[in-house]
Image (tube, rainbow, N blue to C red; front, side):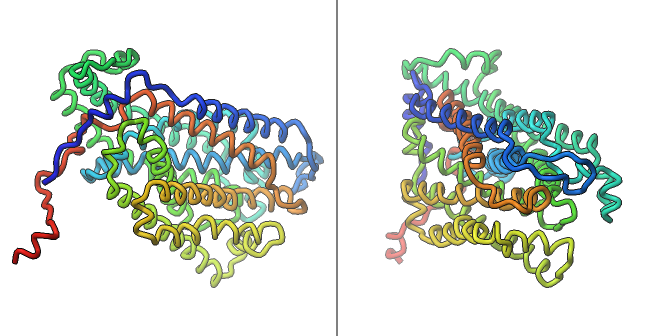
Length: 464
């Protein structure tokens, strides 16, 4: 027989809890390295290259192009992981799933990165980042002259800005509101229970539970809002992140197109979100007081889903490659050949495939590993790094082939430093959120066992 979870360790972990100072300093150091790497790329010219279209006599700095490419890579990775990981909470609410509730607070923490990544993207575009896109450089007439007249209207600068502001703005705002409505009920219930246990309640909670209407009414209101909003977020994610994949990644190679590319991206963003959910849950479980709530079978379930997405990524990657290979169409085959057979990226692509797919696939085959938090954590970190490399291989070769095909592999201090900068900001935002609030969704009725659930014990089989 299942029992209701004991939240006492969750409540006892809250008073006096602050963000780990060592981790915070490490995050600030990583952010500083990221800023330094970007500044280095912007203010040191590097190799200068001519206008690839011959439209002007201007020359372009390869270091600046690398900064722009690295920003796009990291935005697509970390923003995707934040939104994709949060989407698992949305899917869990939509399907009335219970096991996902154990990870719900961590997944909500991922969503707190979205306002930062949204603001960074707008600043990046406004400060000249939009100039890295070939379609922006060529203009409407350039696309038509190159035979891409069907794309000229879509890749209009004003329309592009509108899609980013409205689409990403909608998903960021809706995700934030969803988290706040979920959090309010948990804070109110936690305050009541902590008062009974004579535990100090953080003062900063008061603004979020102002005009508290009582446990029953608040929990019902929270659940109703989430259940009604979750399908909207799910549909919005599929649409907005399909558009984002085309606008930010695929349009770096304006003559290439693949129908599966948008879905391939937004599904892999969920994959990266699952990986980071596991990383933050395992590394913060003790501090959040949720170790006893995270039984091995919950890690096993998350690991199985991660393994499934690993296989799905491999399947969809090959499903895109195969028709491009046998179709052998000019506008498609160059995109693949530049990455797989080119002198600059060929070996890097093989390494990425090993880190992103082959290694995680073999490792996650182990049933026991997925139940052991420390080993699971190591596998998750490896997979997270592999997906980061995949984002590099999707975006940077497109910039390289258009702007600077005569230069070597653009991977060094700029790319590594900016990756660390994004990582530092990402980890700081998520762990800062987790340090302030209950580690479990204590007001969520779906944390309780299903009354219809039947448990069959092995010894019963010998009674017949």
